Length: 496
Image 1 (cartoon, rainbow, N blue to C red):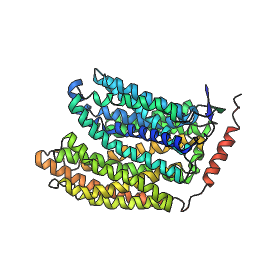
Image 2: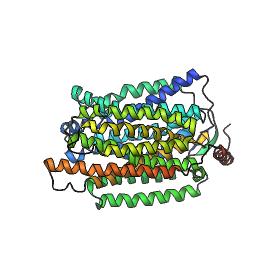
Image 3: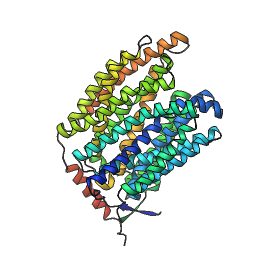
Image 4: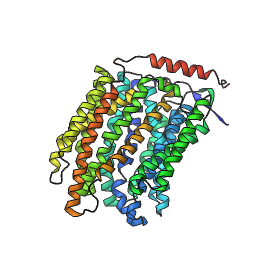
């Protein structure tokens, strides 16, 4: 098996000004990542008409991205640790640019689905690489908290820009424009990275890349997410869905067996001794299973119940996106002043209250104005939790393993979204069978009212999970992680 060299922990970039440009670029990368989650939604009908997609298969354009992004996150995180964070970051952006170009030029449905799948792999490389760069270039504490707040605010802005830009581009230039817009953005970001992100450090220890583990976790995660995404469409008893679940379990069990025996695992189980990372994983799962599913149900309410156009729906997302962005900045200040544990509790409490208020607006006869108070309060809570949960996931992990730690947290984030949507869409659809017209709109709104209340209850579970964090920050887990890493390093020869 070929070997790769593990980078030593990077030194901080020289000068605050240089770090400022670096953070601006990392925030831009997150904006591109978030933008791409929403920009394709509004173009789906046009893509279907032009490329001959039957209505029920248009969702594959979205699913292909989600499935492959979820399946490759852990490998992407480990690649950042072993190959270098800047190398992985630049590679991810180039994958984004090239796959976006292929998507815009796609002559048929098969090509565009493959292009979206490759885009998903680019996303799986980009997210953990970006997070590990933040967590190694900015020291733990107020500086890292601030950096994560800026990064999170850019992500919130990207969700809104994606919805708005998708509507504008599709209406004026056609659906290929929603792919082409990524080409200059990602290409310029990749070029800028060569100038503003510090070079990857010299690689001093040769470490093998855990290929069997990578194949097992990638195959298992991809099949698991695919089954969760396609289950509502194909039916949970579908042979394809059941087979995917069974094979996913077998592959993940095999992955665990490989990791327990290999001398340099893709996902070292000792990382889970870090309570902050373990609790952070649980919180990212709960976050996406609750806060993360709200935009989907809000879109259905606005378009299917109230008849909003794609552009009108994008404009409706301006208010919650501004609230979320404000919450990310507030989360940083609260975490620095009161500690991460209290900040997460505050964020979940605000989010639960705001989401319960939001449910009042999920009524066929209610206007947008009735949604606004809940959108604002829930959005602020969502932003607070977003910043604080990434602080938790990064705390106490050695710099040389930030990539895989963030890959683990990002994987639970993705699974939380897939499982949350699968469960809550099934609940929302109860009572809609056989109905049409006004009766269907009423049943849809009623089902979503129940779901939004249930997500508020899920946020209360997030409060309970947060209580498992230590009351005060400590570097003990960081020291333990570094000691374990150094012990492992002794197993491998130095590169001369």
